[in-house]
Structures are given as C-alpha cells and as structure tokens.
Image (cartoon, rainbow, N blue to C red; front, side, top):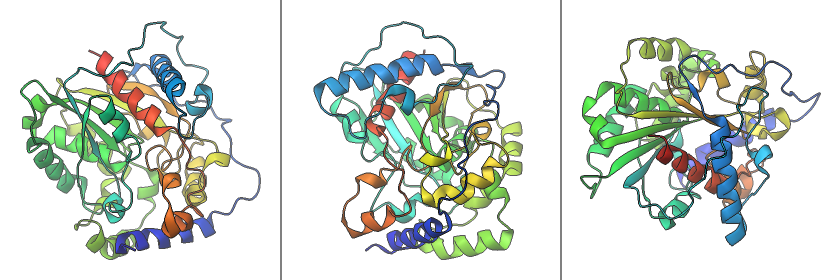
Length: 353
C-alpha cells in the first residue's frame, strides 16, 4: 500500500468514526445563495446540456452511477428558464486540451486516485486530449501557481491553434486563479478556467485551524504529498479575498464556476463534521466549501451539483481492493455520474464564446 494512501486511509477512518449519523439531518431551509453581481447565470443552459449528454450516452450504454437530472443538479427557486437551444454531443472537432489540476492533499494519494480519473477516458474517446498537472498537496497556492505555469507552458505537442481548458478541482482552482493572475504568459495558451468546488474566496474550515495545527498536519503529510507547506493557510478567507482584491485576471480567458452542495443525508461520513460546522453559517455547502465562496468573480455560473466535496470529482466508490473497501467506510456517499458531468462542463465551455 503506498504510504500516501495509507495516510489517507488513517485520516478518513478517523473522520468516519467522528462523523456518525445521528439526530435530525440538516436540510436546505435557508434562502438559496444569491448569484453575485457580474456573474452570468447559466444554470438553466448547463442543465439542458447535462440532461442531453445523459440521454445520449445512456441510450448507447448504461451510465455509471446514473441519476435523474433533477437529482444530479440542484434546482433552486431562482434558476432561470430553459433556453431550448440545441445541444451538440457529437465527437469534438475543437482544438482543446482538457487539463485537470488537483486539490489539497491530492498528491498524497495520486498513485491510487486522482480527480476525474473515471471520466477523462470518456473525453479522450470523444476526441479530446487530456492531461493532469502534478501540484503539491501541501504547498501554498503561490508555489503551486508556478507548477501550473510550468506544466501548461511545457505541454507536449500543443498545436498552434490548440488551447487549454483548465479544470481546477478544490484548491486546484485556487492555484490556477493565482497562476493566471501572476503569469501573463499563460493567457495566450489558456481558453478557459473551470472551478469545480473551488474555495475561491477561501473556506471557514481553513480559518478554524490554528497555525500550530496547520504546521503539524503539513509537516506529517508533506513528504508524501509533493513537498512544501502552507496549503491550508492559503485557503483562509482573509488571504484569498485579499488576493482577489489585488489580482488582475486576464480578460482573454473565460471563467466558469461549478458549485457542489448537498443536504446532510448525502454527505459521506468523513465529511459530516466539517459539513455540520459549515451549516452553522449556511447549509448550502459540500462539506468543505460554502456555496458563496465557490464563485470566481465575473465568471459564468454553470450550476449547483448535488454532491459532496469528494463525490463531485473523486471516484472512491469505483476503486476496488482492500484499500478501496476500507476508505468507503468513511466515503460512503460517493456515487455520482462524473463522466456525464465532465463532458457537460466541456460542452458548456465550448459553446460559450
């Protein structure tokens, strides 16, 4: 068993033990999160794309972890009406490289699982080329921004007319935002950034860690997670909001936000304690990030995914063997049609000019 995977196992088993289900489950009784000024509300269109992709793929073969559209995507009262426009699902002729950037502690378990590793083969079968950027699981967003920059500029065989769609999962989205704001040489190569459950303006979970707690966790994890420290501190709300206040993101890049949020019965045991802590602020959260913190300013809001922070991107339920079985004791609400979700994301990006 890889050491990093063993470390993850210990964390999730302990978290699972702390996250026993009891009492009245938390549900969405508060007002839905408001769409911030300057953000384009594309929830209805993304729902059309998701549902059409699901219908087409499901007609050809069973969709893994399938669920009805209204169960897969939360429909809140303020969602705009459908557009009725045609959805393209044919193999892509677009010159786009889909590049996934993982999140906090992801490098610790990269030999075992990476974000969307169940979904990228579907995109490749449709004609897209895909990549995964190796960032440190414990380094600051400033340090990882350099890694994102180096990875994008050194992509193999990137054609003159081929551009990159960066899909940042969790802290990976924060790392990419910092990279785009810091390194202007990235802009000519990047068509879009999609934040998936990204703590763009930070998270109260990071705020709650004392400096000594962050230091202990990152010191233990760093040797197995790509080196570096400061990752948790990078996600404090004060730090992220101060960065966004002074950052200038390139206007040539298009920005998209996809938010994960779910009611308590669908939260994995390992995420129940932070989910309940966040619910004291707002029940519209995924166990790590509040919905209000997950939007890139001035971006296109794609939608609210009805999944917790792990289920939206990490296919734990698809993993076999002893490690997979043990981890699923704590990650027990992980089923989600991620292949459909990732394809719908890419289709939505392609049709937004």
